[in-house]
Amino acid sequence: MESSLALELVRVTEEAALQSARWTGRGDKNSADEAATVAMRKHFDSAAMDGVVVIGEGEMDEAPMLYIGERVGNRKGPKMDVAVDPLEGTETVASGLNNALSVIAAAPRGTLLHAPDIYMHKLAVGPELAGKLSLNDPIEVTLRKASEILSKPLSEMTVSILDRERHSTMIRALRESGVRIKLLSHGDVMGAIETCTDSEVDLYVGSGGAPEGVLAAAALKCLGGEIQGRLIPETPEDFVRCQGMGLKHPEQLLTMEDMVGREGVLFVATGVTAGDFLRGVKYLPGQRAETHSVMMYSGTRTVRYIRSVHHLFQSNESLAAA
Ligand code: VTB
Ligand code: MG
Ligand code: MG
Image (tube, rainbow, N blue to C red; front, side, top):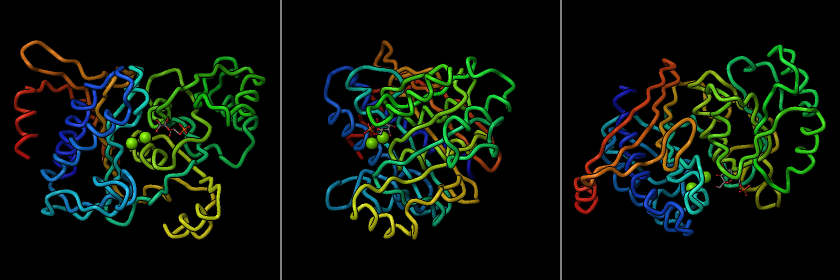
């Protein structure tokens, strides 16, 4: 059941990727995002589930599609919570940079954290470090512990972090510690995932979007890694929003269980632009295109990679007919 649903969801991220990839490097992030969102919405209803969007494109009144609370799926399957980011990396596509993705996570109804669109402090690690570090520790302590557990000197570790002014103190501390640093221009879902792949990245730290934190938690649960988070409500309104989403103490440490629950979670993603983990959309002769996706299920810890060749004629036609 999980794998057939995951495959149906891959179909949805593939369509979003195929449409948004057309905007690669064209300097128009809104059009790229809209193309992904429209395509994702149009294909969602073929998935056999009774889904409710808990992380989506915004509140109902401001976003017409994939708003929080919207029902998705054909209603003929399990009741699910659904988290989407039709285009994780809108600027990335607009600038033609690496690692833009289309992403969906799904888990039994009531299990995914309804994270508001604010920042979240994050610490993500791969299987070797999972369960062994704490976001409560100062970064120097975390690095020292990680270096001991991994049995390698700090100078041979790599830490990734979004390249942002708000991280200047943290980046300085990383530099003083002697670790290698991978500065990300965007895309911290992929940043967190990379701690679990055969990339050089050992830790992902810093703050990024809270919705992206929940999406990353879904992926890391499937990959055997770990992410911890702490929301950063900046205004009294943010506090109220967090509490409205069921978080009595908005600044509490969030474990993976807080973010994605105890039950099986599905995570699917399709590459939009090129990346180390997933290749981007490639248009082929004869109105065809190739996509690379991953589908994972935490219940079995299966990770499947799917290379698909699409006939764009059919893809566009089914879009027009939908
Ligand atoms: C991250 C990253 C996204 O936003 O969550 C980041 O994953 C956080 O916001 O790709 P800032 O850009 O304000 O730092 C993105 O870069 C864009 O959604
Ligand atoms: Mg988005
Ligand atoms: Mg995003």
